[in-house]
Every structure is written in structure tokens, then in C-alpha cells.
Image 1 (cartoon, one colour):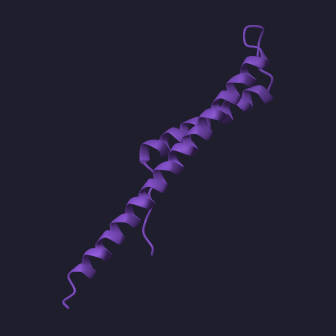
Image 2: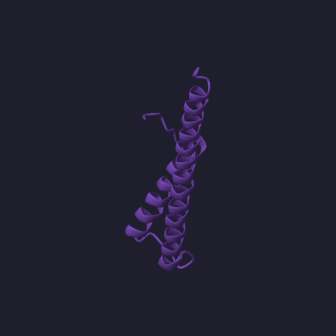
Image 3: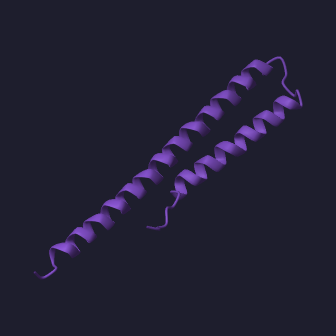
Length: 89
């Protein structure tokens, strides 16, 4: 049984945005551009928070894809059962 699964475009955009931000924050940390007002520790915590957002979005996307697969499986099985019920005896 083959069928297409799609990533929700909104989730895709959010994941790309979070990933881009994560890369930028870590590049900022690597360059050590933090001043007295913006300590490295704060930026590292921010990086960790963004990483958690990426993980959470991955979970949401995975759940969405699994839901699509289960829905498609139910649809196919329902159609199969309906076909069997119309077979003449």
C-alpha cells in the first residue's frame, strides 16, 4: 500500500524559521559578539530554547504525518470492506 504523506506547509515554514534562528544565534555565540548586556550564558540558553522548539515542532510534524497515514489506512480498509459487502452470493 503506497500513498503520499505531506508536511503541513505552516509547520514546514515554522521549522525552517526556527532552524534559521538557531543557526544565527549559534553563529553569534561562536563569534563571541556578546557584550556586557548580552552575556554568552543568555545566548546559550536562547539556543537551547530554540533547539527545544525545533524538537517540539518535529514531534508535531511527526504526529501530523502519522495521523495522515492512519487516516489513509482507515480509508483504504473501509473501502475494502465496503467492496466485500457488495459481492453477490
